[in-house]
Length: 446
Image 1 (cartoon, rainbow, N blue to C red):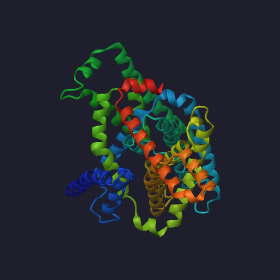
Image 2 (cartoon, helix red, strand yellow):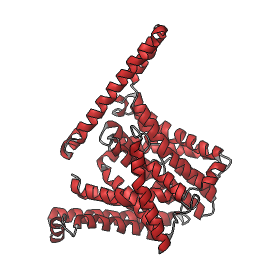
Image 3 (cartoon, rainbow, N blue to C red):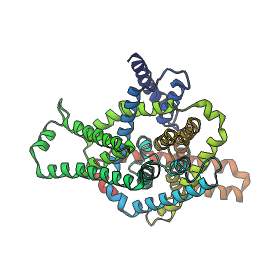
Image 4 (cartoon, rainbow, N blue to C red):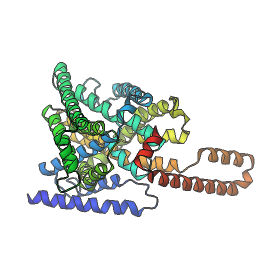
């Protein structure tokens, strides 16, 4: 008990300090999530050994993962998944999976027909949409065209690998796995239809929940937490990843309340990002073995390069060829591709399955998880730098320098002034967008 409380005290202290450190850096180029992971690595068993990943701490971390994916599922518009961009998202993910299997076949370290190779292939196709949500929200991109494209492509990069992991990495017979997955989906559908009908009918229970939504009972929040814990428990009982249950819970909440509920969102965000989500990232960082990472730098760099090849390239091609998305600038399309290459939570889940099955060493898993953690730092940083440049102005400046090299310094100064002005306009537009009521933002998206 004392060990659990000491670990929890250190975790909440790190969760308190990390935002202060992140905010102290000008322009906030490094997401807070990165500092949470680093704090976990430093204080974890492979660092100063202050944080112990006991069962109690692990349970809280799993709840953090659940809240992360609950909010991710809630942010997804089911109509968008079946729309034009959503269909391109699933096709693009399928292309990434085919490319990943092609890469795994030629890798000498793993076997394409065994769990280790399958785990690496699935890990290469993931997008950490749950991790990206707070980053996109922090940068004011969630309701922009770039944010919408990241959600359209990134959501399938989260859902499809979970399903692939369930089907391909299971040790059960294939028909049993399919039957279990179907049974879970049936339970999830019932969990959505029953409250939807109750709301439409205006029954006694639903009226009670609404009346007590904002008093000491907080019934609306308790209802969502009940749904989250129930579906993650069902996932665990069915030997499925809890991510599937959490994501389903988020989808169900959005289905039951399609117009959204700003007060509910604020309360869930306070619970999730105030405690559970930072705890999950710190505990994830604590599981990374720094000595194993430093012992295999080639594997670390190689895995990140493969992520760019397998995930970023297909997403960039998909965005560039879409009827709607191809109107984005090259810079914005590259930003979408880089954001969709951010990966972490599912890499943790996939490698855990492979390690448990004895098909992958803990050292290799640590390197892959560390690579996923680096993408949480690297990809948002690259997009931050990229989004601050002006495509047309830069190309024009380079042409002017080519024709008149002697004026290079005045031309570059003019270009920097244009960059600063464009960046100022973008910040003003984002502030204005944040100030819009939710209904107007939705109308604007439509």
